[in-house]
Image (cartoon, rainbow, N blue to C red; front, side):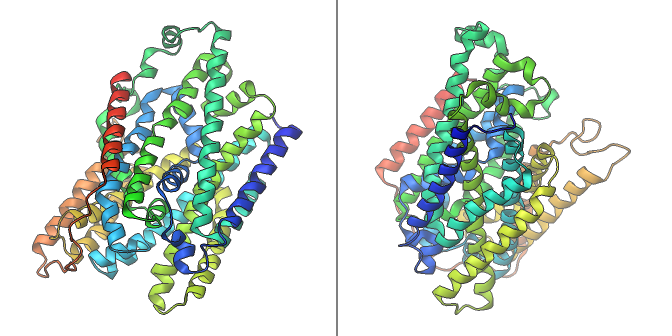
Length: 532
C-alpha cells in the first residue's frame, strides 16, 4: 500500500492536531514554576502515572517487533513484557519510597545524596546519551520505517512531522503535557492493537480454523508456550531471559530518568505506588494484543509473509483493516512513537537543567530553568532528527541498542540497589563500579562485535567460542559490578557517609497497594500456568 484514503488521512491529521492541542491546553496551569514544568507540580495521580509509564515504554518497535516475534517463535518473547510486571512491583515497593522521601528531581541527584557528586556526573552523562541516541533517535527511525513500508511516506519527512508534533507540546508544556497526552495515547495504542487482534480472530474461519485446538495445530503448539525455549536454535534459555531481563528491567523501570520522572511527579507516595502497579497490569496486555496477532498472522498469511517477517504487522493492517480503521492503526503507531519521544525529550531537558546547568550555576531562577529546559529540548530534538535517518537496518540497530544497554545497566543497577538496601557501600565504591563495571562490559562488547578471536566472529556468544549470549553476559556483568562494589567498599578506608535521615523507616504501604500487588502476582502466575 503506497497511498492513504481520504478518510484515513483525515483521522491521522485530526489525531495529530488533537494531541498537540490537548498537550498545550493541559500545560497552562503547571508550567509557571520549574517544579510545575519538570515534575507537573507534583500533582500526578495513579491512573495518569500508570498509563504514562506504559505509553513511554511501548514504541513502534514494540508493535512491529512483537508481531514479528510472535510470527517466528510465538509467545515465548512475550516474557519480556510479562517480566516487566514484576519489575514494576520492585519500583513500587523498593525504589519509590526512597525517591520521594529524598525529594529529588533527577536520579543523578539521588546518587549524589546517597554517594557523592562523582556518581551524579557519570549517571547524568549516561542518561543524557541514552535519551538522545537510544530513546529518541531509535523511536524516530522505527516509526519512520514503518510508515514508509505501509504508506510510502519518505523517512525524513516522517521524522520531521513526528518531531514537530511531539516537540511543540513537550517543549512548551513540560511533564504535564507529556503525561496527559500519554494517557490518551495509551488508549489509542490499546484500541488499535486490540482491533488488529480481533479482526485476525474473526478471519480465522476463512482459512478453516474454528477452534483453539485447530489453531494450535495450524501454528504448532510450541508457539503457545511461554516457558519452553529452544536454546540451541535461539541461543537463549528461559533462565537467561529471566535473569538477564531482571537486570535490564530494574535499570529501565527503576533507575532510568525517562521512565521514573513521571513517578517523581506523583501527588503522594501512595499514588506513585498505585501508578506503578497499574502499569504492571497494563504490561499484561502487549502479549495478547501485539504478540498473539503475530501468531495469528502465521495461520492467516504465512505464505504471503514468507521470510520477510518484518512485514507481519504491515501485511495484517493491509489485509484486515478497512478504510477508516487503517487511520486508527496509524494513529496507534504515531502514539507509540510520540509517547516514547516525548518522555525521553522531557527527561533529557530535565537532566540538562538540574545536573548540568544547575551544577554550573546553583542560583538559577525558575524562569531561567524553564528557558534552558526548552532550549535544551530543541537542541536535543534537532540532533536526534539529524542523526536518526542514518541508523540503517532497523532490526540490526535495535538488537545492537539492546546489547548496548547491557554495557552500563548492570553497574547502574548494582550502585542503586546496594545503595538502597545497605548503608555500607561507600561513595568511592559507587564511582569505581560505575566506571569499572561499564568499562569492563564495554571492552567485552567491542571484542564481541568487532574483534575476531581465533578467526571466530562474535567469539563470546558464538557456539564456536565461549557460547555466552548477551543476556547471560548481562547478569554476569552485574555479578562482576557487585564484586567491584563490595570489594571497594570493604577495602575503602573512608567509611560510608550516608546522611543520617536517608534510611528513615519507610512509610507502610496502603492496604489497596498490597491487595492489588497480590492480585497482579496471582494473575501473572495463573497466566504462566496456562501458557507453561
